[in-house]
Length: 160
Image 1 (cartoon, rainbow, N blue to C red):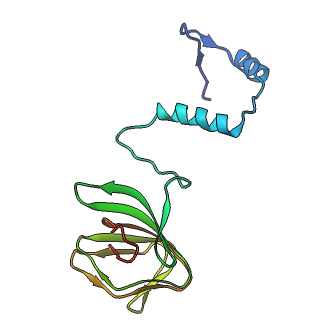
Image 2 (cartoon, rainbow, N blue to C red; image 1 turned 180 degrees about the vertical axis):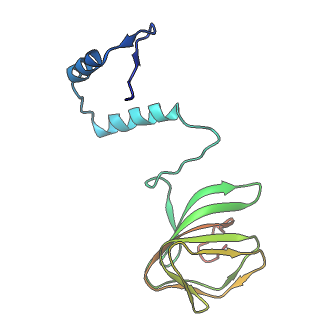
């Protein structure tokens, strides 16, 4: 049986009954959502590891790259001129034929995409080496992909 040791600031251990009484005596406080968010942010700011980057699902900005294709950049490696991004493709979206100047990795997270008559489903991984020419990708049902490859161009009319 595991025993919880609750140490006091001086190093003494509180017994379970005292801990239980303290927990019962503390009334929950309801905070306004804005105040709660600010407090959470301040607390979390002190716990982050500078070697780890986190982009929460609700964070970041989705930008339209093509009709039916939105992209959210997760990480940019300026030295390598690459980025990792999420791609959200609507049903019926198409990604035109394009070439790769750098290696590209793609993992299908949701839905399906089709290229050259082959359909790729969740969990399927594609690796295209630099210099690869892709024919058009079609997305009949909608999909979410994670891609790591060259930086996206600023213009919505060009592809990576």
